[in-house]
Amino acid sequence: MKRWLLPLLLLASCSQADDQGPIRVSAIGGPPTMVDPSRKPPDLTQRVLLGAVAETLVAYDEDAQVGPALAERWIVTSDGLSAIFRLRQATWPNGKNVTSEEVARRARGIITANSRNPLRDAFDSIEEINPTTPEVIEFRLTVPRPPLFELLAQPEASILSRAMGTTGPYQMGKREGGTVALTQRVKPPEGSKDPVLPDVRLTGERAALAVARFVQGGTDLVLGGTYRDWPLVQAAQPAKRAIRIDPAEGLFGLSVVKAGGWLADAEMRQVLGMAIDRDALLDAFKAPGWLGALTILPQRYRSAADPSYPPWAAFDITGRIAEARRRVQAWRATHPQPVRVRLYLPASPGNTLLYGRLAADWRRVGIETVRVDKPSESDLAVIDEVAPAGSALWYLDTVACPSADACSDEAIDALEGARNAQSLLDRSVQLATADRVIANSGLYIPLTRPLRWSLASPRLGLFKENARAWHPLTHLVAAKR
Image 1 (spheres, one colour):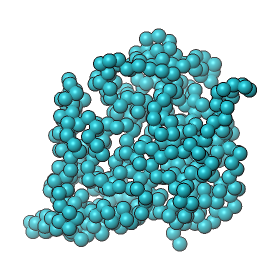
Image 2 (tube, one colour; image 1 turned 135 degrees about the vertical axis):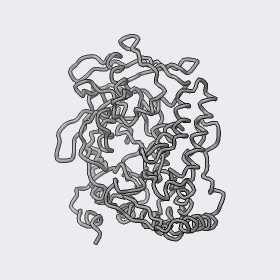
Image 3 (tube, helix red, strand yellow; image 1 turned 60 degrees about the horizontal axis):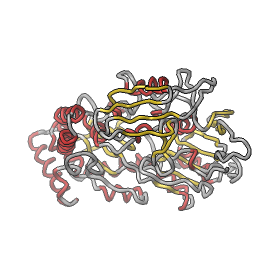
Image 4 (cartoon, helix red, strand yellow; image 1 turned 180 degrees about the vertical axis):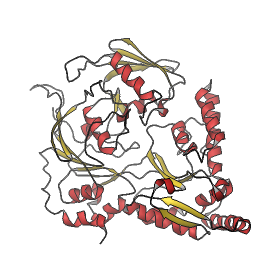
């Protein structure tokens, strides 16, 4: 029996969810602990916790639309080079007022050279962050109207005090193992029109336990599902209406991280992408609405050209396989060594499916696949990330230089040119150049868009799928007033 099936079969003693009690949320990840994202990138559970107890300047709603949070309102200047925010009246847990100086300190910390914040490079368009009054802060920008607000709404952009104090709608209460109780920070007085938020119990746990708990009625919501865990959902067979798949934008593919031997040749690297039958891969997973991908960019964004396809994309799958075989045979004619690729995939049911499909597709064109035990031994790395914003620069930056051994210098130069461009036209041309160069290089192999799924009970009437795959705990049910 597969180990990941055991929790689905054995967890039969969970109490049934109570529509009137706290909302029970299982996040696939570690325990719900507070982290500073600029010192340590948070996992999914930590992101959910940050989104509940901390505040960003602006915040996503259930549709991933940006609205007020710590900033109650804002304006963008007519030239698009300045965003000015007015802070709401807020206090830290010690009773002191939140000031624009503290917000500026925190925001600058995200983009400093030694920051480990996952959004650091995405904020490349910020030139200066200046508090102008105790309640007003200005972001000066190097390019007009970048996707600043989408980035500021991410939990990695949370505003924390030096003592890790927070101002979010929830506060942490009692802990029990991997579960923390969350209660509304400030309860509205009786008769107030302000919303009353439901209590939440947030648990961080393995996917198998989270799915089993949901099926047994022990939790209202499972967050953070990916392709790695999707077979668990198929095995557990929850109600179809409970399965919610986000139309997530982002990257799911393979990056070449060791460009030695036959992988040093761009035409041979392209064989890896052209040999993959993406329709068969999608059919193996059978995730409704999951779409294959041949390009890095899902849309043009601010590039001067439509997304670039790899040179072989004009062939149908039969033609691609034939061309891949021809290239491998031509290589073998002058290189007696086996054409072999090493691939590291952590143990999970989804990775078992993925490896089986990739190995079969590459085998039929003459490439041997070896599954290795350590990332350091792998020639390829899986990229599975949801885009934090609609930014061509984020997509291209993510795949242009996956390692020192496999970098596209021409693409790096184009991306640097885009950052330093003096006009939007120059910037768009440089982005188009980088996109074309990476597509032709074979250093990144697009497979699909990211698969992100949740399990949601009917109780959660506000839950909605969205492109950022982000579901704030404050937007799950209609708040009482």
